[in-house]
Structure formats: structure tokens, C-alpha cells
Image (cartoon, rainbow, N blue to C red):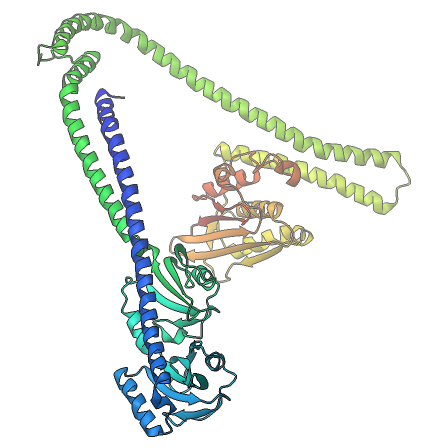
Amino acid sequence: MRLRSELIIFFLIISVVPLSAVVYISYEYSKLAIRESVMSNLLGATDNTGNVIDNWMDTRKDDIRVISQSRVSLTTEKENFKEFLGTFEREHRGVYREFYTLDLDGNIIFSNIYRTGNERTENYFIEASKGKISVSDVYKSNTTDAPEIIITNPVRKNGEIVGVFAARISLENLYRIIEQIDIGKSGEVFIVNQKGDIIFHENQSLILLNNINNNFAVREVTYEKNGINEYVSYKGENVLGSYYWLPLYRWGLIAEKNIDEAYAGALILGRVMVEISILAVMGVIFLALVVSSNITRPVKSLEEGALGMLSGNFKAIPVSSGNEIGRLTEIFNSTASELLDIRKKLEMKIDVANKDLEIKNKELTAANEELKKLDELKSDFLSLVSHELKTPLSSMKISAEYLESDANIVPADRKEILQIILRNIDRQTRLINDILDLSKIEAGKTELKLDIIGIRKIADASFENIKQVALKKDISIIIDVPDNLSPVMADMEKLIIVVNNLFENALKFTPAGGSIILSAKEDADGIEVNMKDTGIGIEKEKLEKIFDKFYQVDSSSRRKTGGCGLGLSISSGIIRAHGSIIQVESEPGKGSTFSFKLKKG
């Protein structure tokens, strides 16, 4: 590492590390303070909203107490009572939907909207008839489809309960008050009953139609708990939620705020901290560059002088100071002049010796590389050929010995044994022919008998060669070669060898039930031939080697599938002789596609 780099790193370490620690600690403390502030504000909003609800509901209950305890409620003059109730309706416009009185049997004996009926089974009537003020559950009005509640209170005469006074109250005014509470753009306030049904929401279509008792805050508040926490809302969003239980009405008040918005201050603080840190680091780097430059400039001059001395272009280094580096520069200049004289004399002698050594070294290297290649080829050839020859020879020997040892072999068995011998002879013949073909290709002696031929004819000929093998292995062969495809200029016999080899390769590595598609298409440049299979595929790092002679995809494939790894190498050589190349695309488990392009005839 260069001295200047070391100095810069040193400055960065002694400044950036402490700075980063200070920034990190400050950010963590600030983030904690912001978090606590956000939670406090949200809790405050929830408490304030709860107080608003309590105050509003207390006012309604006070109104009902005043009316039920007034003398007018006992009068038989219904018009006077109705006029008295009208003052409350006008004072609280839109709050009271109906005032009515019930006898102790639950019959409605007075209603300012002339309604009749019996409510003796309702809980709010039962509690009021026992002497308690009662608030019903929230329900939706049959006439307005708006959320309402009923508040009831006993009517007493001479200390005895003689009836029940009830008021049907719209909650829309209360909802409008709650909606004015600001908890941010993403925040929402809603109220649930003890079952988890929404009884207040800014989206009134959810009221009493959506149960969210699987929400964390809803579960907590319906267990009559108060608190604040981070959780996933009923909408599936990460939120900070505050929940507050209103025991008098069995309501749960919940205020939620999106986590990102809730902690936006912390995120902004983090960005500011990062920006400040970046500016500080840039300042430190600038200072380090300036200081290190002043320190290393004289050293750099010495380095350049030393390099110049090595290259033979040494020039005396100017002495820029009187300190230790300046004195070192003077000594260096003097020593360098003496060394250059010695060097010139040695270089003349070394040049002569180097030229001789260089020539001999190149000759030895070339010979050594050639020997290595020959040795590798010999080893591969001997190993593969001995294996491929030994196996059929052993089979033929066993078959021949069996024929010789038993004179009473039935004709069918004798014919089958002779077929085994013939197949092994054919196998040896193919191996020898492959080796001879490969030798011609490598020697550049491949002779092409070019003619104008159709790809369809080559495809049909190759299909005839392999269709029985494909049928036996339960592999479907599809020939997708248009009849109107332009012909190509090529050696038909050689191309049949190429397509045969590609078919045989695909058949080896495609499992039963798979398929092989031989297709061809035409463009302005020529005819492209593709063979696609659904076989085991080839790993990416092995794709470049599959056209090497004697190469097998894995070490055990030769034993599993047969062959000596010459087919693809021969095919590649034939296609190269036609002025093209074979390309392959493959992925393990998804098959392989071999393709090459030929010139039009």
C-alpha cells in the first residue's frame, strides 16, 4: 500500500470512527425520543377522543335524566310534553331522532313521531325499569340507515317507578366531532363494540358490517385493556396503534397510524445524520489529501527518481527542503549516478546472454507443450479405445464360446447370439470409423461433396435411423421442417452424420416419456437447424467442453449411456467445414437445444 493511502486511511480511522460513533449514538437517542413523542401524541389523541365521547354521551344522558325527572313527563297533556321535547330537538339539531315513553309492560304510550309498539324484551328497557339509566348497543336505523343508540331512564312518581323514558339518538354528530381529530394522513380512528364489530369509521359502509376481532388492538381493547403497540392492522398494514376501553358503553376506541408516517421524523433525522456524516467524511478526506500530499510529495520524487534509474532515464532530483528527506535526496542523487555507470556495463553483457537464452527457452516451451498434448491425447485414446474395444470383444468371446460348447442350441437362440456378435462388430466398426473421421477433421483433410439438398430430406433420413430406438425408449420424435424451406449447399452424407449424432446424444440423455424436436427455419442469412430435447440438461460450466473429443458430461455417463465422446466433436468439425458452428443452450433439468446455420443453395 502506498504511503499516501496509509496516511489517508489513518486520518479516516482517527476521525470517521469516533464521528460515526457519536452520530450513531445521537441518532439512537433522538430516534428513541421521537418514538416516545409519537407514542405520547397518539395516546393523547386517543385519550382526548375518549374524553370527547364521554362528554358527548354524558350530555345526552343528562338530557334524558332532566326530561325523565321533569313534571312535564308525567302530564297527560301530550302536546305540552311534545312542545317541551321540541326545545331539546332544536337545541341539539339532528341528535335526537325520537322521544318516547313506555309503561312498565313495555308498551309505547307516547312518541313525538306517533310510533307505537312494545319493547319489554329489550335490555335497555329492562335495566331502566329496574331503576338504572341504560345505553343500548349501536344499531342502524331502519329509516335512515344511520347508526343510532337508545338511552333510557326510569320515570318516577312519588319515589316509585311508573314508566320508562327513552330517546333514540343519532351518532352522526358524535362521528363528525371524532372525524375532526388530526392523527395524520394515514391515520384512522374507529370504534368497535365488545364483539369486534365496527360501530364508528370514516367509511360508514363498514359500520356494523365488518367484524375485525382478529386485529391485535381489537382483541386487547375488547379484553378491556388500554395501551399502545406496533402491529399489523386489519388492512394488513404495519401500524402504531393506541387503544382505549370505554366501559360505560362497552366500546373500544382505536387510533392507528402507519408506521412509516408515525416515525417519519426519525427517518428524516436519519437522512440528516447521514448527510452530515457524508459532509464530515468529505471534509476529512479533503484535509487528508492536502496533508498527505505535502508529506508524500518529496517521497514521490525519490520514487520517480528510483524508477528513472531502473529504466536508465535518471535525472537528478531537485532538493526541496533541508530536512532529513532533503539530505536523503542528495545522497540518492550521488549514489544513483555511480550505479548507472555500473549498470550500463552489465547490461551490455547481459543482453548478449539473454538473447541466446530466450531463443532456447521458446524452443523448449513449445516442445514441452506439444509433448503434454500428445501425452494427454495418447492417454485418452488408449483408455477410451481399450474400454470400447474390450467390452464388445468380451461379449463376442462369450457368445462364440457358448456356440462352440453347445452343439444342440436351438436355431432361435443361435440366431440371437449371432445378432449379438454382429451388433458388437458394428459397434467396433463405428468406433474405428469415428476415430478415422476425427483424424481427418483434425488434419484438415475433410472432403465435402457439396450439393443442393433439402433439410427435410436429411431430417427424414436421420429419423429412419433412430425411430426404432426412440420407440423402444418411449421418446416422441417431432420433425418440424417446412416442405417449402429453401435448400442448402452442403454434403448430404456428412449432414446426416451430424443429425444422427445429435439425435443419438439427445436419446441418451432424455428419459422415457420425453420428447425431441428437430426444427428448421429460414431467414435472410440462411437456414437455421435446431434440435431440442427434454433431457437432463448440461451444467453451465460444462457447455464449453462438450465438443472436445473424448469428453463426457459426467464421469459415469460413458458407463451409463455408452459411446466414447467423439460424436459431438465430429459433428462440430463437419459443421465447421461447412463454414458454421454448432451452438448449445442448456439448463440442468430443463433439456438442451443444439443449433447450427447453413448457407442457402
